[in-house]
Image (cartoon, rainbow, N blue to C red; front, side, top):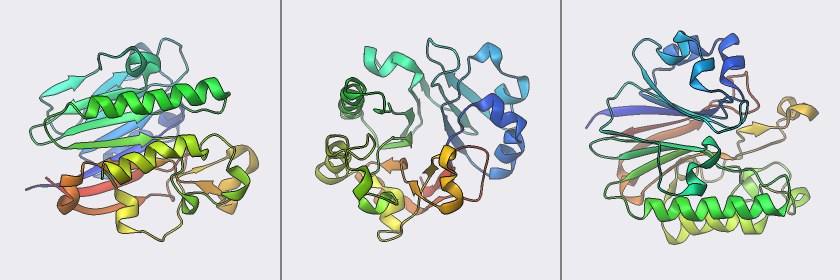
Length: 255
């Protein structure tokens, strides 16, 4: 078995993040695999430094709209397969999902839909969740998926649960999928696996300077198949790294 360090980060625009020192962050992270969300870029808009950083290969998926959505993976490990087509129009749309297949596991990185624009987007989000779960159910090896899930699972996962019960991101109909996948399906929320009672957040509203007051939400996750429980070493939120309205999160495990 080898020890792997995986990172996930909603960068809120990779070109803006590059100007804030992203390449140095990546090269100093020690990460074997990094999943980025909300890259807001197409490949032709990216610098050589972003496309080909030392020691990593990069894989990108963008939506049709420029400056919107987008995901990427940096990997030191050579994948068996790069997964860009999920054979589903919803999963393929908007540049939200990318995957790599390795010998012993699949790695997926997702920027899951936000339901904040109205009930039609909440319904779209739930449809996306369900279709993603259906896709995972057909795979033949353990899964690690990460990203901005855009939903806080339980009351401990946001600073002000009572005020947000009817806010997208903490509505019961959104949380139900996390209850299902982490409960009935026994997938593992890796941070909560190690820290069942720790209130910690990965996203803050920048307009209200919520990060300074730590009035946040934990909506970024590393989630694994149940059979990987014995492989997990630690999972954390790197709240000291700035530059986005999200903090990077990481997972350490043996594979």
